[in-house]
Image (cartoon, rainbow, N blue to C red; front, side):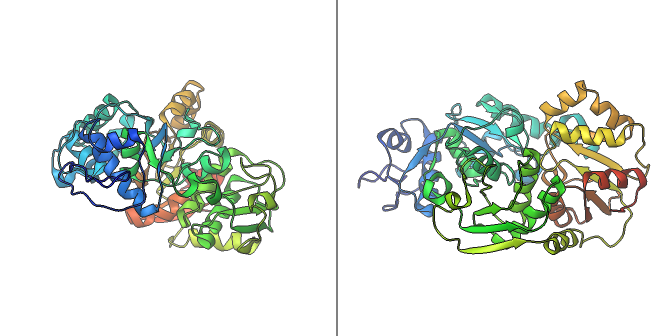
Length: 445
């Protein structure tokens, strides 16, 4: 076990030797956690956070009361252990402890992100009883610790809306840029281990985007072609991620307000082709009054311009895996669809019928699916031959309908990842183009 506030070595926890040095300094409360005063699980979590903080060069930890992580253990995570107990799996995968630990109730408000299955459609996923039992036991274990099973990549759509300036510990490629940028909350892109440790301790390293000086823009991006629709924002985001990687842009030339759904898709795209955890749009995002303000009065490191040709190049790239136009699967809802997006699909399908050769699946948070069902939109989609899913997606659950060679989606993120994950070809276009492909079995964007 580690110490950062003195020179006396602490007793090792779970067999870890003491390592002197490092950058993280602990408060008295944190030192007590690290020394085992709150139990071995908390001590193991503190050990993990201290080692992580050392890597980041953090001088201290910061309190967080809002953590979103991925701690459900489906078949991909536990197959090496066989029918392992959730306690052992959580200890090993999330707290880096080979010894099963008695984990106390979560100290921070904690949410489970998107998971491996939809309970209402498990049979369609082809999950056997043993796998379902494994996932259910894991969910029950997490719930018993106080983890909210939101099971969505968009917790901000179903009630977890952090305040400006709030220190969070979140995972997920759409969620991180959304809450950093649009809401002005503060988080780095965390992982399974760091979010689990934050849940247990209510702490996260005070580094990266938790610090004000690291949240200013470094690059200026000028919009030289209309970016109006959600589809345009998805394309623009993919362009940004590809060119900026991990830099923070300020975007100039966007007229008027921007729909939050478009920014949901934008952030997911930018954080798929790159690692854009934050961006500024003057008059739209939380921390940018003007371009100069977003840059903190400094000149940009570089300037980029997004042109019509860039738009066309991205669309061409995202369609590059497809060798034909016949479609067997249409996937909508990555990141999970908003109520408005579900309604759009329902309106496009109303009175029509999906081709017998196509599966149309729409993904949304389970809480929103229930509202959409009460509104009659799920019935419209299902009468047309589609299906509304929740809690998972093809990339996370690693499943597509049997016989899928080529799929269509309105998600730049899904078409970026799914061909490599599932060995299928992808077509990318507007929601309307995707629904049209579902009706005809052909891609004609």
